[in-house]
Image (tube, rainbow, N blue to C red; front, side, top):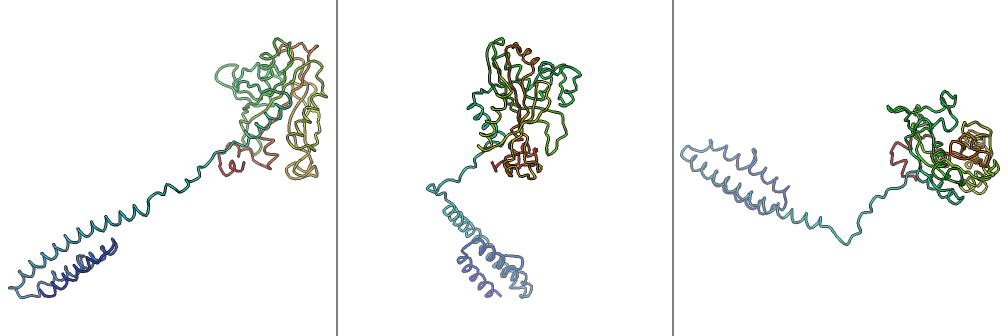
Amino acid sequence: MIEQLEAVYKDAESALDAAAGGEALRTWEQHYLGKKGLIIELVRSVGMLPKEDRAAFGKRANEIKNALEADYAAREAVIAQAELTQALQEGAIDVTLPARERARGGLHPATLTLREFYRIWADLGFQVFHSRDVEDDDTNFTLLNIPPHHPARDMQDTFYTTTPNVILRTHTSPGQIHAMRALGENGTQPIRVILPGMCYRFEQITARSEVQFHQVEGLCIGRHITMTDLKGTIAEFARRMFGENAAVRFRASYFPFTEPSMEVDVECFLCGGQGCRVCKHSGWLEIAGSGMVHPVVLQNGGYDPTEWSGFAFGMGPERVTMLKHGIEDIRYFWGNDLRFLEQF
């Protein structure tokens, strides 16, 4: 058995020197030093020897076991260093390779439409005038010919604050009062402005309505401004926004701050007026509300309605974006879903 032990020791040393990787090293350890390894099996068989030979055999077996364990540890360190060196060499960064392309953000679809609005209205001679989101009740309603208890207040579900008379504006129309008072120089100067901004209404969120949305208000004040000027201006905007052949129609409507008032429709640019699902098979798409500025509103803005007149309009960028791209749910604009936003 001593000779067998020495033969196993010799084979183990040779196999250890031949082990070229971590996996081979672990296989070697299990084969020779594991619980069922050759060295351990020989140690367990010591009881088969005569009593006088057991001590010498056990001593030599322990010497071989300790020697193999030390050799294994040394070989393991060498292989680990070799594998680390190889990994560093293979994983080295090639600084000559082009870098990964960085993800680039984009403009929100509503912002894209707003910028298109700005460009068109700037070409038509309108400047941008920003007004505040938080309004007082008088400016949001009363000065726009909507006194307390007026039925038109029921058309707009208002967000009220804990401060009396302070609300979130329900439309951009109160900006008309601010613009007339800031730019009109006490009712002596003509003005042409658009008033973009966010509006807030306490409504049920659905595919067609949100509690917040953009509006672009338009206001033109001057001497001898007529309905013809309004219709021509809106028609020109529609041609620039929806194409040179865009047809426009006007329908009588009601807004407290304009008189007369009308809704503006553009011929459906998706079906060419033939009727489709988007235009509800009518051939027309509503894009704006408009009208001649009510004399009471002119007077509240500082103008003499006997000498000055004007027109106003309001349109929603989200609605126009939905119409142009066939978007059926307004909630997509505020959902922060990149699958939707990256399409634009």
